[in-house]
Length: 466
Image 1 (cartoon, one colour):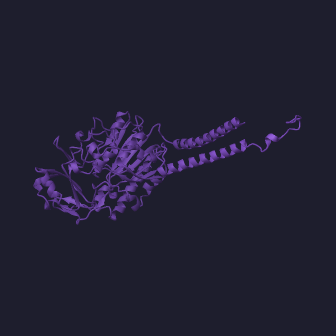
Image 2 (cartoon, rainbow, N blue to C red):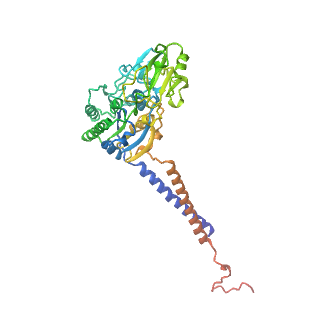
């Protein structure tokens, strides 16, 4: 009897465990089986230059909020240093810090090649070949890419350009860029599965008026209208439910003041150095004595940090490249660095990438993304592995972390630490309760009746004692 009761108890325990495992596995399966379009994933990456993260809360933006309500939002994206246009756009599509992908500023000098780079002289593949942007990787792995104004998409990088691209021009309106992209993504002779789209606002107006100007209300309304135009065009082209759309930016914007200006000519003669890149992170190439220039500059202003290249803080990831100059000046937020003239703009970026004013946001919608999900922050280099996952591409080496973005996706089981602890505690409580119930039942079944050995059956005629 004891053996059979033990076997019964083990069977009951095994059954309880099986039921629990079945429930948990069912939960995981339901989570992972969310609808995706993995058979033919498409991705559109959109940048509205200079879209500061807190614009979302400061301005109405109904069309952007419509997209977010049916998609995901990352409230702050920590971008790369320096927080300027070209370095950050290349970081988004390579997953690399500026020191690793080589586009370290909007204006550069390479001492080894004796070459210069600027916003108006950016087409030499030499500058871009230190990394593989996503459109190149996509082409190399057998797909077609498209680019509408995104920095670098018109450059022959590793002997490759996107299958289709529009060279950046202020004269190409936003609507035309969108039309081109939708036509590329619906071509019967080979559809584009990855495309990039760039627009220069609200950056241009942010520089001109400053992010705190009332004029920015109208500027952001126009940006929101363009987001609405994009949504409507994707719907008209029957792409809205098929294409994954990521809307983000390269950096934010800080308000300037003429009273917050650092004049270098008041500290050092202009004949002692060459200014390679401009405010608010100035790249200094000393003409002769580096330490002489450094010692004069480091006492120039309490609102400007002065670094020798080898002393640049590690958190900037900004010293292991020959294109980074021997001395770097970093102005405090809202301050400007000039030779001798006051700045002619009211807003700027490029500052410390830890500053919230420098951060953009990320909003996304599509079959790969969850609906109504919000996350506090990611790093901009994390966007690259996210995009590779959506497109099913093998990543190039990068500084990003897919785990930081997996909660945005439908096909990932995402659980945060507090939830994990709650589930573990809950499972332990259930198992403990089941074990207690089984022990109680076992004890009841195995309890002997009192005096059972003295009970005589009626048909038992033999006395126990003669």
